[in-house]
Length: 344
Image 1 (cartoon, rainbow, N blue to C red):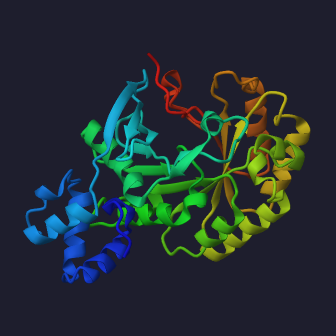
Image 2: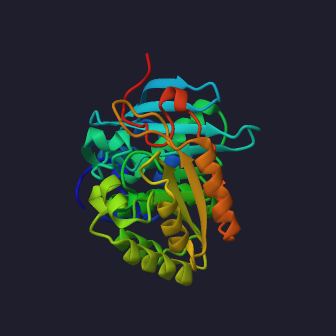
């Protein structure tokens, strides 16, 4: 097996690695528990592993601990972190406590940077660096959990990157987070948001866990969506709806449709009619998002009255619709604002 940082391996791959190192299979379980249940920073801490195994792992499969480089705290309690991994790559992660402090949600990144170049997103302007490993994705959740001193209850793959362009590592991370012996977050409390990568949606439909699928749609008018999200223009809106209907049919789970309200871009009556048509016959929940400020962007949020009209019109068609409670905008930690920079 290829030698690489230990957190590059899924739990299943750890089992294969132990076999190749002539170790009993239970060693993989012990190793995974040290990495994720106990979040060990070095092999020296793993006292129930033989010293010879620890030495081999240390020499051939380095273990890097994530480091918080900066942290910002919003007036609403949201915390944004700039995290550095072993090779110096930086990503942003957001911890979002509920207003009653009964839940703690982590918005994690799946890639350093993003190749999608969406017009409304600061991350896309930064370009793409690399995919994150399963352990680096999980580390973000554990870093937030340790910093808050509170167990994370929910996770959303809505940070930097397109999860379905890093599908295998994202799913490996979700399995670690879901494992009751490791992090233990219920699958129904885990969401993944995609720009609409249809092959990924088709694969996700085959996953047995009850993860939530969210689609960043932002327009049901083809030319508008293509302009906002140029790197998914190859997937037509009719094809996306067919893929989502297949997903619902196969999983019996509804999808979340995320729609960023942008003034004079995607909030006209024509846009509303097209979106209602897209939602028709689809088991879905609509999450409207008031656009957050992005530096150097000409795009502006829709006015409050327009958003209220959309909510009323969609609900009148029996389309369950909510307005996202956007958090952390004062620290550039809200939707579309993550770009590895911090407020002074």
